[in-house]
Image (cartoon, rainbow, N blue to C red; front, side, top):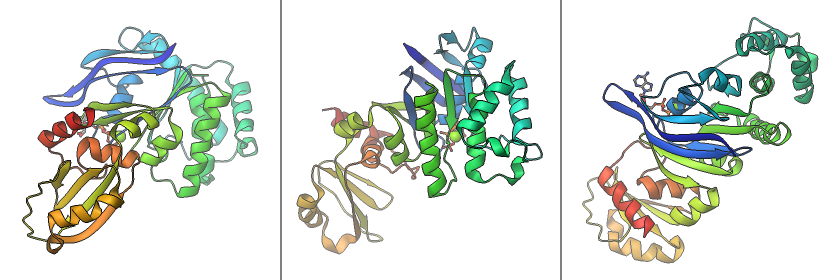
Length: 317
Ligand SMILES: Nc1ncnc2c1ncn2[C@@H]1O[C@H](COP(=O)(O)OP(=O)(O)OP(=O)(O)O)[C@@H](O)[C@H]1O
Ligand SMILES: [Mg+2]
């Protein structure tokens, strides 16, 4: 039983393809992560799935309903938490919930709202203006609002962006708890590898509008992982790296190896110690999965399609 099924979901803005034939399925009760760098198409995907923008091509079925043919049925079965502010700080928590109830057409909302506030331990603050809420309290209220209409699926666009470490941990727990206690399927986006790794049962890695890898964190690490030796070259170093699995970009050479420690001396010899400014070793993790798939880190935007596809072909062998 799937809560989300997308088939060739595509969004074009003019000639620009922001989301490019994305197909994936999310089982009921899963926490699914869309992981990708800035501009990858995460928010655009969520906007299509939540009915905020129509797809140019393709289809998605949410909780059994088509986003194209039954958008109203879809909207009544989903909750949504954006990365932007959604609370009205001039209103109390209770008033924010009332507005949410009206927007989503929930009739007997008061009982549900009370039980949610109780669940999150913020019932005593129901009549306080949210302008006076701490970040953690705000997050709890936002999640309460998303749960108000008893949705089957909640979409969260970068739920922990900009949060300090403690509040991020709180939010991770909240996500796990509502998934367990309210049996809600969750699709979240993130560009934090460790977040996807820790929270998600499965992950779709999205880059330039395309899903480039899909699986459990363990599957992704087994398939695309491996250690990475990263050599920063001195300015003007002209190196012809004759090493297998080496990618050169932005003055850095990244080499995928099975075990970085045992290969390091060979790599230094091949590049020539005179050419080297610094060395970094990345042990296998979702980070290295992303580097292996794209030849760049998730923060970097440099992208060389030719090398990228060569990498993918190599990774698949
Ligand atoms: N309304 C729009 N008109 C034109 N281009 C758009 C529009 N919305 C998004 N884009 C472009 O589509 C691409 C994908 O944007 P999107 O917001 O989905 O990325 P994202 O993965 O959410 O990135 P981020 O991590 O920065 O939030 C970007 O190149 C963006 O500039
Ligand atoms: Mg976004």
